[in-house]
Length: 134
Image (cartoon, rainbow, N blue to C red; front, side, top):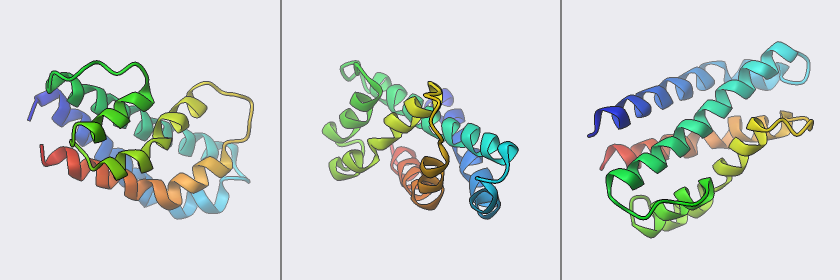
């Protein structure tokens, strides 16, 4: 495996471990604590950003056509059977989540963070598993 790709995967795993370790605390106090919300936002953002970086990297390493958007990166992984197509379609929300957290639309992110903490972490772990098999 490419060394940079390996380091990105390891960094993504660290972030998943951090979120899993703090998941209960984040879910319990997300609304009540601005500090907790900021920590959760940053960590979830990093998960999304690193996942998309990895998708782009795998596409480049394999010499596939360059994606035009973050969503396109995920779709291409499915189109080229790097991950199952159904999984690519189900994890496409990662691109929107990344943009939502990156661009500060002045909208409360608590619901999105809660959803990701409850179900998105398992998606990221599955993604890691698929990439590690390359």
